[in-house]
Image (cartoon, rainbow, N blue to C red; front, side):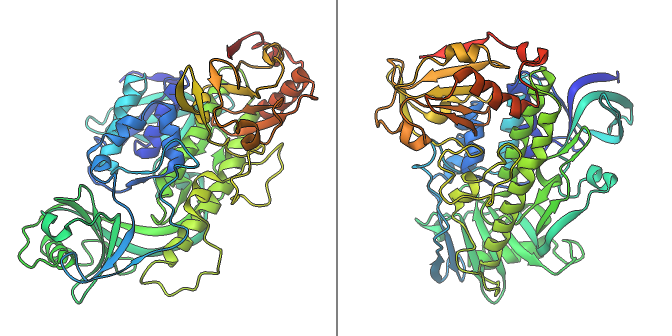
Length: 541
């Protein structure tokens, strides 16, 4: 095969690698992705896409496609965690905790969804390919070096054995929890380590009658024959069963042949003569670990290569998706010449503390589930929406005291801009829909002056919106309050929907914008590079 040159090489074609490809193509880049397996996952492993990840997929136009998958449609009304002797047997009181808040309608225009990994990955793959990404399944990285200008990688086509060279400016490492690249780089991981090992049994069996009208997310099953977690995929004939393994065991060593798997399914269902077809078996481990660094030169770790966590809370893959989004817009700004390489330093500075805090929350939730006897300090486990949406990034290089803020940060710099229902041309939209993920956005209050002239002199293009015009209105009249500014103030928001800065009428608009953007972009005000992108203002309202 011919040698190729690309802006970004992504290694790993799972949920996070494919998300990175989607987000980079959204920025106008054409990355190359290599994945050693011949196709997307055949096993429904990760299944919960939390509210923040759904916001990011909504931004790139994928929310409807994800919600249209078989599992998302079937499980749309499922909620809660239950306990039972078996599906057909005695059901114990449910597992209820204050932190389990699956409904985020008050804080987001979207919400979390249950979509199995074997259905979500093809959605991402199709979108990335149609948007210009070069996705090469059945190709594996066999070596790489980097220099001051880029990365040189050797890739092998596994079917033919043919090797070729890829030259890229940057390499995104999304090669999973065991990450060969991370190990080659000698990056250690810190954390709680392995909490437990499980076998994931994907099976087909008609459990409609035993299920009845119940619609749960997960059932803890315990009887004389099996202790397991039972998870519906379509509420009818596709299911998952999680059974515990002995420490350091795998499916073969632990004696889990097809007959034993079928017996476990029948015991969990409580139907001794149930016809069962085993579709797949996969061992996995629940662990809490975070890499000591997320960046080595031009290589960036995302997803499981950077952090692993128990599935409790559905934070794992969603945190990786957020990594990919955070990195994608920063890489694009640097490659477009809008920002210096210093912007890329903020990837680790922002994502590593968030990953660490999220891993700790997932571990605490895991220890709080049936079967664990560890005492959890009161108040240690934060509500799900706080973990998913309330994290805070450093502001001007100063790390926040608490990475996770119970109040979501009140629209302060370094926090996600709040959701508020607005109207544009008579159509209801979320305030989050103003942030398209591709550039900086300034939203001015209903009594603010004209910020368009100031934005025209900024160091990069800015889209300007003004609340209260005929095109964009605030029916609740709460925009200023929820964003923490007076009615004549303004808010500058990053491509990822995080607040960069807030301004009052007293601020000198041009100087304020230039200072805020120069701090982010790693450029000094007045430099030629900073001035190169001026006079490109997109105004709305």
